Length: 382
Image (cartoon, one colour):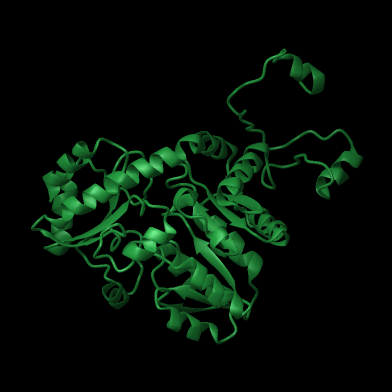
């Protein structure tokens, strides 16, 4: 049913919840309309791999939160990163990347992107002189994370943007651990912000999505084209679920961050804990920077190292059964991950040691449960 007949189904009322559009194809009135949709004169849809109403609605709402000029939603966080990089790069280009990135990002840069003739130079993004030195060689993109995975170093985005732009280089920031609630990289001078919507923004472990946001409107068509022709398009239902989650995003992020601060303090006093990494602790190297960059709440992620290495981690997982061991983050409930065996599994062992990704390291994604319930579960394993 189309047109006025369809409108009459709703009468004079309209739904409060946004509609879900599962259709893979859309009927077009005529060839003239096809041309107007294709050239962007009219808003319309042809084939869901190119775009669809749920994806467009989600991208627009998120772009507002990110204070960005545009947004493109992709089928995963890695899809969003890939679409962005392929839109910005060509064979022979060079990237300078933080040496503290999500393991799959590092693997993609070092192995997959290298196959297309793009080289990557790794640098400690907390060392601004080292970054400036690396950028002295012509570079197309500087890639960092707002809060690094897994040891939670905080990027000084304004200074990194200044260093990049002084060399005619674009700054791309993976903002997944912070979300636009705590940091909006575009406002600090980044050219592109990447979010894995699978994590805190989706927030319920039931979607797989990513998104890219930018300040230059001319980049959006290129990113959207790559996402379509490389098959990185998002599922309409996942977009609908994520749009439904946005009204509670700030509440969830700030509640989880408040719990994380208390959890980090509690872990510091456990005899079997060798190290606690949390930007809200005064002994964290980026404590002051986090206070400036992260809107008063240094996130919901806490990393800690157990005495006893892998066996101690295994014991923790088996005893603290109320904290599921699942290699992701951002659920409403607290979960844990093991970077050495999951997110950074394929990293060179010597590089893991250099970065502090030991066999005893656990990464907690702290949830919004009552704090005493989280501490009770942790105490069973620590």
